[in-house]
Amino acid sequence: MSPWGAEGAKDTGLGAVVLAAGASTRLGQPKQLVTLLGETLVERAVRVAREAGAQVVFVVVGANYEPIFEILSDQQPLIRVLLNKRWQEGMSTSLALGAIAAERENLASLLVLTCDQVNVTPEHLLELQHSSRREHVVASSYAGRHGVPALFPSFSFPLLQDLTGDQGARELLAQDDVVAVPLPGGEFDIDTPEDLLRLQELTHRTAPSE
Image (cartoon, rainbow, N blue to C red; front, side, top):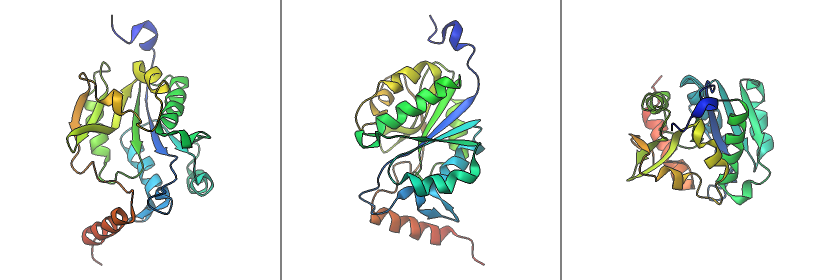
């Protein structure tokens, strides 16, 4: 029997959840507010998701939520900010919040992305969607593994809600039936001051000259 069932057939629309609840302790400043080409990383993630067709974007915040919320306030109601009071328990709690919100909206599928993977583009998120038949999770592949961004059909929302710890959806994305779409440079994210320096160098190198 199809995992969708009769009720699943009613689900419509694409949503996205941006995981932005972490404290960025290794970086020493909120990575969500790091600026890249005139926009913060959290704003960039929201924009990329919307340009890829997400009808609603949930942004899960936790640590440093006040300045992040302020940055995003002028985009309401196009986005919905979810406050994760349990963010210290790990990324799984943020994924669960996003999945609960997606389920309430009767969404057909949910894009899951972080705000600090700067090589993610709307085109890549569209490729995830084009690779989906609503029967499998679709993950990005890089550095020899599967990871986010990933596209979760509605049948997997309860699985996301059952996750625990700080491994996120890694276990789900390691399943044999997960469809993988290559993401060049997907392993590069902003975790340390060295990562930030590298980002600044890349930005300076690629920025158009006046």
